[in-house]
Image (cartoon, rainbow, N blue to C red; front, side, top):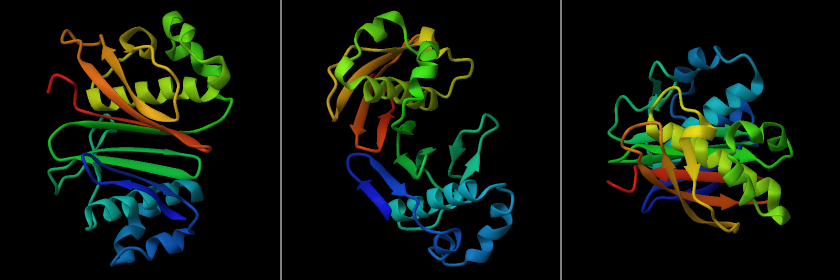
Length: 212
């Protein structure tokens, strides 16, 4: 399948469905041997494919191969580029978002009932009351993905998803936008969350904050 979704304006993001083998993904690079030493650090086949697919997708979005480095907290960055980057992966899919000016956050999650087991860890009572019973699983996943995207774009540690990240009530739709606020910092920044729901996954992303 390879490239599944791609958008270059106003933001630059994409989704890759991992149906290729490790060898096929390596073949997407001009010099596959460069990637082999780092690839050997990945313990499982799926981790190898995720690692490679992210870099293949990044090449697809920017047109050139890029080195991805990581801050001590695990956040990715491009040492040889001005682009801000965020990365996410879930079963069969990887997602990448880039912006030349503002920090970004993206999250993708495979649709499953596992979200029921963790909802109390990230949903407030007010947020739970806003869930559409007819679309409970994807609606809950949108809240989870949105808070993951917020966590990534904020760049803060010790963030309580339930107490410090707040999603404004919104009506469930297959695609759209909604607003969120963080209370982790004194600034209490507002964010615009963009989202997409497919039959297989939920995707959210945010760029900067609404005061920028």
